[in-house]
Amino acid sequence: MSNKVSFDFTGVSVLVTGGTSGIGYAISSAFADAGASVTVTGTRASAADYDTELSRFAYKQLEMRDGDAVDALAASLGSLDVLVNNAGANFPDGLDEWSPEGFQASLAMNVEGAQRLSVRAREALAKSAMPGGASVVNVISMMTYRATTIVPGYSSSKAALLALTRNLALHWVNDGIRVNAVAPGLIDTPMTAPMKPFQEMLDGELAKQIMRRMGTPEEVA
Image (cartoon, rainbow, N blue to C red; front, side, top):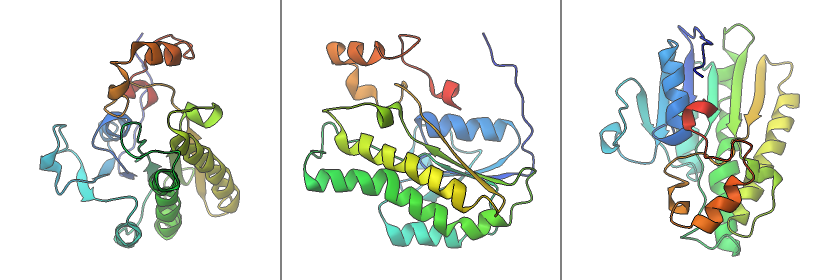
């Protein structure tokens, strides 16, 4: 069944962190399809360094764990209608998220960067003339609500991002800025691709999905 709902975001400015692949790319594409002016961020030097087609978007290089870079990006914004804090990562084959170093790296990547960018972008968001006010959307995860032995830093940081969402929504309620979160389940993206060879683990995760399959980025967008 195709989604027949259509939106018109002509004239709306959107910033999507981590918008070069996966869920972020699907969100960016959906906004662009609806007429929005979309800027995406990624860690590589230029948009040409990615396999995905990014010509419809403005591109900004950004490492979410670099506070100065986050500040500089926010300072470059004139006004902003929609901020999607999508950039995130887990480290199942890299840093040990049970170690203090791995846990801190996950917090810095998944929640501290989003908090910093949101707060720094508040002035630009407050200038929005979009009907209903500006919008911040934080991409969390169903791992927020589940215990895990594999990526404890990731799940803990996403739980923190949910708490931040609630706090910002209350704090900015009178500023014309809405703050919400979306919690995807297991989605078929480059980040989840390393799971596929491990069928037992994959089957265990799919058993928790209502549809018993991996979702698509477009379904989240």
